[in-house]
Every structure is written in structure tokens, then in C-alpha cells.
Amino acid sequence: MDPFLQAALDEARLGLQEHGIPIGSVLVIDNEIVSRGHNRRIQSGSAILHAEMDCLERAGRLTANDYSRSTLYSTLSPCDMCSGAALLYKIPRIIVGENQTFQGPESYVRSRGVDLQIVNDPVCIELMRTFIEENPTLWNEDIGLPTQN
Amino acid sequence: MDPFLQAALDEARLGLQEHGIPIGSVLVIDNEIVSRGHNRRIQSGSAILHAEMDCLERAGRLTANDYSRSTLYSTLSPCDMCSGAALLYKIPRIIVGENQTFQGPESYVRSRGVDLQIVNDPVCIELMRTFIEENPTLWNEDIGLPTQN
Image 1 (cartoon, helix red, strand yellow):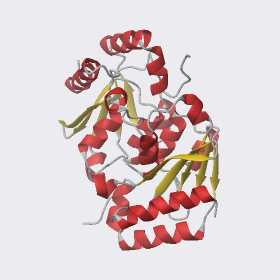
Image 2 (cartoon, rainbow over the protein chains, first blue to last red):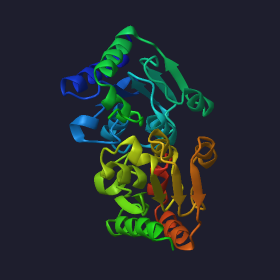
Image 3 (cartoon, chains in turn blue, green):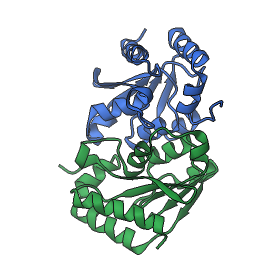
């Protein structure tokens, strides 16, 4: 596996160990990981710290020049919010572990000029499939869908 | 002025008092303000806490049913990231103080079914115009544009 996607997957697993939603992300500039993040809905009671947002936040205040040379990795297809954050900062490339268990606005992101690549890695797919099966309510909350009562 | 837009403007001014970027936001559900936020790039060294994101974060983990009855107010046209957050949570209505000093992806947001209304309030416009004039580098950073050297 691409070592950067592997690092994102390591973050996802770290989230799972913390009893969180297992999605991870890393930001790479000039072939180096400058930030790592994972979903913190449970851990921080957060409505906005999806993996990619957490990763961008932990990267700190970067310049437009930094973002212009960056690649955002995520184990899962970025949702509307995370895609929007990538568009705001004009991140030119997004590498996605899988889009079988969830699909963000991929066509729109590509129409805005982003090189968005889907790996569909079986380990990333299995991690999310198992989590969603075991935690459907929590998962629906994270993607803005109604939860069962 | 609409009292909810006024509350968002109060948040923007609070941000300015803190030497931050003067953009404010409130989230309204069933005619009550459930959360208030403002841009915290300076105050928290944050790359993601735009006013609307701060407001959504401070609202905590709401249900899809809560979001479905909500209106998001912002003193300024929401950027790609903040628009994306509203789309993720299917917030049906966004009231924008002004879009003269900055325009987010308004057409796209409307194409996704959101009722997005622009007030173009002169006080909101003047607040941003003055801030941008005095802080062009900081402003460009906040909207992902290159800053002067």
C-alpha cells in the first residue's frame, strides 16, 4: 500500500482504539507528512472534526503556497464539508482509500479542478463496513442522516 | 435588522475586539439561537474555525432532525468549507449578511436545494471592507489566496 495511505489507515485505527469513528487522514507536502488526523466526533464531542478537518486543523495556519503543493489522503471519500475545506485551500490532489461505503461530492470536486483518485483498498473498505454494521446510528449521525429511535 | 443577523453581527464585532477576523454566525432552530460563533483563525491559530464552523462546533452533536429545522446566519457569504458543512448537515436555509466583499459557491449551494438569501446589509459590508483594507494579508490567508511577501 502507498505509505501515505497506510499512515492515514494507521490514524483510522488509532481512532478505533479510542472508540471513535475509524477514518484517518494525512496531509503530504513535498513527499513528507506534515499533519495527521482522525475523526473525533466521539472523542471530542465534535460536529466538525472529521478526519480531514482534524488533519487540516493540526497542520496549523499554512500558506497558499504550502497548500498548492499538498496532497490530502483520506481512508474514505471526503464528505461535502471536508471536500469544501480542500476546495477552500485549493489542495490540488486528494487520494481516497475507498468510496464503497460512502461517497462524497466527487464529481463536483473534480469539476473544480482537483485530481481526486480512488484506491478502493480492501482493508479500508472492510474497516468501514464492519464499523457501520456495528454502529449504524453513530455512522448516520456523522454523515448527517437521521438516526433510528 | 433581523435580530438573528444582528446577533451574528454582534459575534463578528466580538471577534474584532479579540483582534480576530470580524465574521460572525448564529444557528437558529425553532426561532431560537442555539449556537453562536465567530472566526477564530487568529485567536486559536485555527485553519478551520471560520465563523460558521465555530458556530456549528459550539452547537455540539445535533440530530439530523435538529439540523432539518435550522437556519444558519452568517455576516458573510459562506466559503466552500462552510457551505460544505451546511450541505453535510442538510441545513435548509442560510441567511447571508453580505456577498459584496466575498462570494462563496452560492449557485452550487442553491443547486443542492438550500434556500440561500443575501441581505447585503450596509453595516456588514462596511465592517468587512474596512477589515480587508487594513489586513489584506490576513484576509487572503483566510480565503486560501496567496499572501504578499
